[in-house]
Image (cartoon, rainbow, N blue to C red; front, side, top):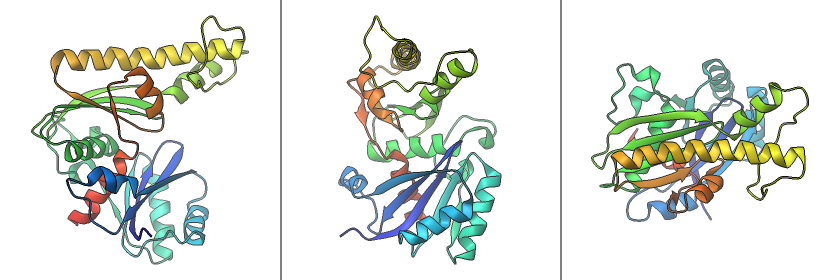
Length: 256
């Protein structure tokens, strides 16, 4: 039976992802096995107190700390307040807190989730140049050197944004979420939209990873994020690490 001692809370644009962290410290060479023993779920960003109540009812509030990274400061503050009422300790992490060198002049301009995922990838696969593709609401394609430095990357709209913009910018086209099983030529408007959205998704990933590989030809590609399976279909040579941020949270937890 896995014993969980802490939570990692990733406050995104639309959802809160909850990473349950096993009590055992993550370490090489079994780090990938450790990831499999972790647990991740997500909630829509509703009332923070309701979310804390759900976590409590499931028995998920930890004996240790809740580690928080966020793109929504106001929601994170309300969530922390709700957790404190329940007696749960919280630590909010910023980009400056992640022990990884980067070229950004101002650390606050670099998303904590991007840097944490990059750091986790480097700890999983040290001594290799890495191209980390994280596909969620947005797609990030970032490069990490074998020496463990974040070198930068690119940000593009992910499937939810691509689909949403097509729907919101037209009068009759519906919001779609491609499955990867649609075939050309599509014989319905829904499938036609799905094919177009997926083509834009794949095109952005291929263009950006080709650019990265031209500069770092020996780099290993790492796919993560909610749409990692579609990334893996687009880039069969990529190594899939579903819960990359879980590793990052655990490393933060055990360095405190």
